[in-house]
Image 1 (spheres, rainbow over the protein chains, first blue to last red):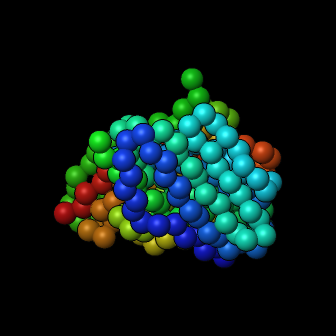
Image 2 (image 1 turned 90 degrees about the horizontal axis):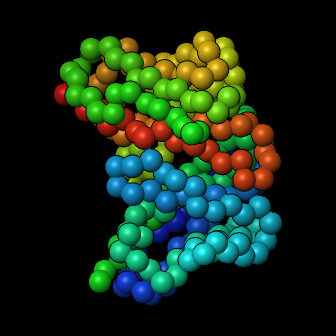
Length: 112
Length: 115
């Protein structure tokens, strides 16, 4: 099975940086995804890591360390519209259909 | 436009009254899933289907049924809904491969309240 942990909630100020950590345990790791989800809406894809290192996409970056079972999502130059939940999800190639399992999500509140 | 659609978006019903939530995708994806999302519990998979006529239980299947008669459609059936099935439901689809950014697409969600 899989176990994915991320903080429940974080608060940051507009213009600042926030780092959301995710730790996971899985038998057949084959990729880690980050999704953004605004309240009451569907999750939308943000980033993907399968090799160790940093992937940068504009104001958002995601890092992966497979040996540590650890990832983080870095949000820079925070804007009010970044207030949302951020979901970490791990793909397991030993599960049927390469199952994607989600963490509980981290709610980020951006204050003026 | 690639999309997953769900209907209805909102539903209030009473205990025991059978209901179906429809899901359709236009990306020719083999793999489809249903999730429920509850505060503090995240997204939990109810059922999934790897192709037509191939369905299997996810992590929380009790009280639900699904069918996959066509590739594009994957309805979720609650034969006898109960209040503990009040939740936000998402349908999703993707290719079942393990290649690169093979991301999962979500429907807009169905908010179900069972009284």
